[in-house]
Image 1 (cartoon, helix red, strand yellow):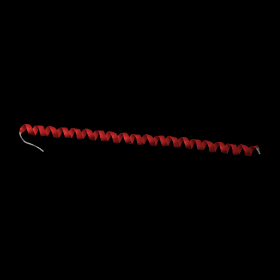
Image 2 (cartoon, rainbow, N blue to C red):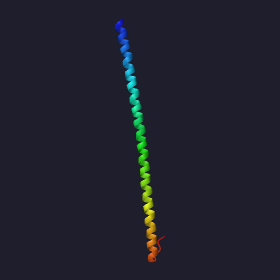
Image 3 (cartoon, one colour):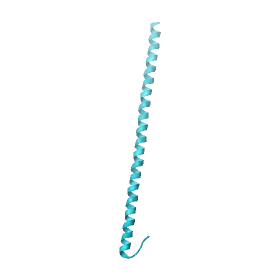
Image 4 (spheres, rainbow, N blue to C red):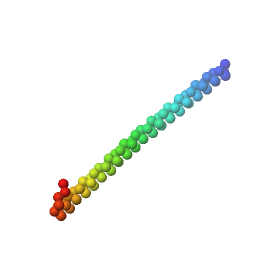
Length: 77
């Protein structure tokens, strides 16, 4: 009878260990997924900033071209 009770207790203990391990693994995976989503947001923001800088440089170059064309007497719309 004692052997059966030890066997049942060991099965319950093993089941609890497996369940706890699964929960902690699931928690780590969830945190990793959140971190990856945050990194994706950061990449998108960096790309938008880069695009805004390019647009600003392009507008500046167009403005310089217009000024240059005015000084030479040739208007570029």
